[in-house]
Image 1 (cartoon, rainbow, N blue to C red):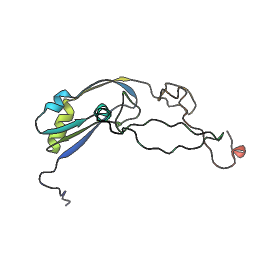
Image 2: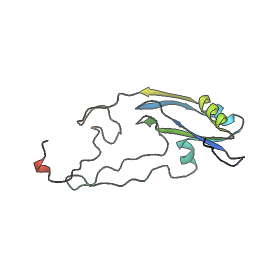
Image 3: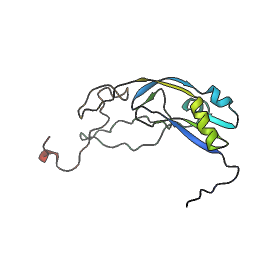
Image 4: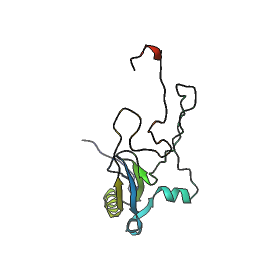
Amino acid sequence: MWMILHPVDALRAYVLRSNITQGDITTLDIFDARDADRVHFVLTLADREAAGLNVLMNANIITNTNSTNAAALERQILARGRVRFAVEPVEFIVADTLAHVREVAKMNELDFKYLNAHMDLVAGGPALHTKFPDNVAFDCSMGNVSTMNL
């Protein structure tokens, strides 16, 4: 039998994640959650920005086939206005117990305008990132491209 050991007064954290593959966030109401008993904080991307904290994840930029730099996608640690993949983090909640933090997560009002996901293996379709309307952020290859069946 496994036992999970933790300090007696340790707080619990929970990441509220999107339950859809792609959509615009139309409602994110966290005020009831922030006022709930035994909640220490509820953090959104807007809170981090208001505090002057870095909200972007680091990324490496690759080189395209034509020797130009690939796109520098802006990826935040919490969603900003749109979710682009299932289970994308939307907010971070900290409360006294795991039961409290899960209960608080249910208090949030989170709604989406669903967007169709682009599933074809060609450029085009609904834009995932507004900077790349054809859904092509980079073009790279390895080996001798002239021998490939494209």
